[in-house]
Amino acid sequence: MEQEPVAPEEPPRHRRFSLAWLTRFVGAGASGYLFYLSFAPRPLWWLAPIAFAGLGLVLHGRRFWGAFGHGFVFGFAFFLPLLTWLQAFLGADFGPWPWLGLCAALALYFGLAGGLITWVAKLPGAPIWMALVVIATETPRSWFPFGGFPWGRVAFSQPSGAFLPLASVGGAVLVGFAVVLTGFGLSTVILRVSRTSWTPRTLAVPVAAALIPVVAGLALWPTIGTDAQDGSLTVAAVQGNAPDTGLGMLTQGADLRGSHIAESEALIADIRAGRVPKPDLVVWPETATEVDGPDPVLDRLVADFGSPALIGALYRLPNGEYSNALVAWDPKTGQGAHYTKQQLVPFGEYVPARALAEKVTPFVKNMDERVPGDGSPAVLDVAGTKVGAMICYEVTYDYVGRNAVKAGAELLTAPTNNAWYGRSEMSYQQLAMSRLRAVEHGRAVVVAATTGVSAIVMPDGTISSSTGLFTAASLVGHVPLRTATTLSDRLGVWTEYVLVGAALAAVLSGLVLRFRTSTTNSKTAVTQAGA
Image (cartoon, rainbow, N blue to C red; front, side, top):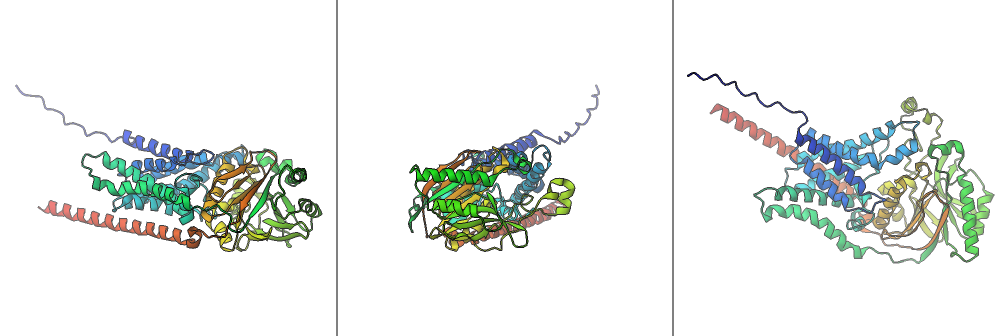
């Protein structure tokens, strides 16, 4: 009996969105969101390395463009919730597009890191090179787009915890590298243990990568100095408050000057009544007033304090333009020297590509731009010492605080105006950066904010006192004056240069290895075909 011919089996159809692809997509997004959860105001610093462990698992075995896509998803899922304060600032009038566009642009850096990781993942000691690639992409993010946007650097998730002391050795870049290295070390351990052929020897490098940064950070804690080396100061941070109206401040005429004068007068009354000690230095927030010449009202106010003050001001220049400045005010001689903010906020204090921006939104047409500083160190001689400044956005950049300390600053201030951003997490994220900078430079930091969060931060990053959001309040506390220079400040930018250089060398080595492997495979295929 003849058998009926059996139809050949159809090859399985390629499913564009397979279960494995979907799992990786969800894993990348979940890891990015977990990374966001490690940031202030949540004290969950330990989630950051776990997030990068998740990213390492997702990227395992991927090719360049697949890894690029998963890295982008990780970055977008991270920046989208981290920067919700930007949407709160812009409001419904602008729609979500500026917020989404910025998040997508920043996520491209994580996409690039994901793609490049596929080139270094085959090298010996892979977790080290993978972590270097991620941290190296933070450097160009400080330059581009629009002069850079370093907000959301890995190190800024670490205002406390095991990794923070590393800031005193290598600054923010070393802290970020340690966090990512721990995460990729952990993911490599998981991948190797999941195989049946692993040995203790094959686990040595990834286990070391996961543990050494944590152990090193913990070992450094006793070396973080907090003692006074040149006496101490009693400082006051004045928070005058403003309406919680976001962009409405432009039309509703928030009287920042009036509110800060009123809060200062209340503080003076408390000092005279003996309720709080008399400060040696008073600090006002960023742009709390305008200064366009002699100011008898501020002269009287500072004279009533009987102590010098640092006044955050829109400072009018002789040509009629304005800069964002911190002005030293003496109780006897009045207005003195000032420091001008160098690192201006794109679309907040200046407009890049103005012609194009005006086509997107009419908001920038009537926006006055600020004049940046000339690059001089952010140091003022006041209250018998040298005081450094990191005005608002400048706290995200390494060089501002570093140059101030190298110029002799024994105390740092961080005046800021966060009134635009509502009750978002923005103020807490910025405060976390000041805490990192305190350890990085071995200096106390006085944070004075128009609407909060104001704080007095000790040199080990701990907060001795702080205010709430959208309340008029003043802080008075003692801070140590320190002269010792941390290894981080002595090494300066060279730590970053070395890490970025090592990342570039690893990428080139990975490319060479990839080319040689491809060439060898091609020759083998030709030989087998000829046989």
